[in-house]
Amino acid sequence: MIPGARLIILGRQGAGKGTQCVRLSRHYVVPHISTGDMLRAAVREGTEFGVAAKEVMEQGRLVSDDLMVGLVDERLGRLDAASRGYILDGFPRTVSQAKALDDITADRPIHVVIDLDVPRDVVLARILARRVCRDCGTNYTATGAERQPWICDVCGGDVMPRDDDTPDAVNRRLDLYEEQTAPLIEFYGNTDRLVVVDGTLRPDSVFTALTEVIERSR
Ligand code: AMP
Image 1: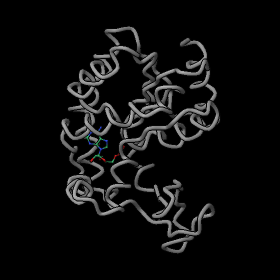
Image 2: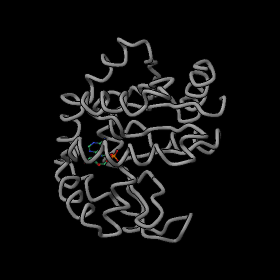
Image 3: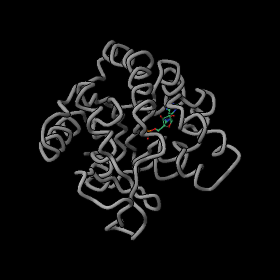
């Protein structure tokens, strides 16, 4: 990938976006900008914004477009994103956020939008098995045999389900995806920036497919 590439990875929550984005960001040495991670960091820090976001996230709702656009605008303006490009994960999530992103990036447009496609029933099972380190955010998949909580291999923190991964909240988020985020497929499809990648393959095959799309995109 040529330095400076700007990507969006779309897909249902639990499609494996986060893990693939971390791997892509290490592979290409570009910032991985995850709005979910930014919000969880604000929650951990206990900022006023974090306290408000925590409630919204636990209910499986979306944080307001204004707040999210402000957060992303500030992040994309930092030196690393301007010079190295970036991988956006979890943003945009609504057509209104996508339109605002087009305005923010008018001088340096997004090169490619990848939809990591995994059907709803598959992601539901994956999310309910998802565990995350409270301290460093590393993702794991539970087999059911582990002690609760277990210890993170990376930092020694507690590995637990995310607070917003209850079955009710997960189903609400998947409904929200169909209502609010799925229209982005058409939004980006109409501008010829969209490529669909099958996210049901093995993680290594998905990674290879993603890198092929990214190499072709510039
Ligand atoms: P994620 O880690 O991407 O699954 O995001 C976790 C939660 O953070 C979501 O369920 C939303 O409540 C909130 N969130 C993350 N990104 C956005 C966004 N772009 N717009 C609104 N809410 C968001």
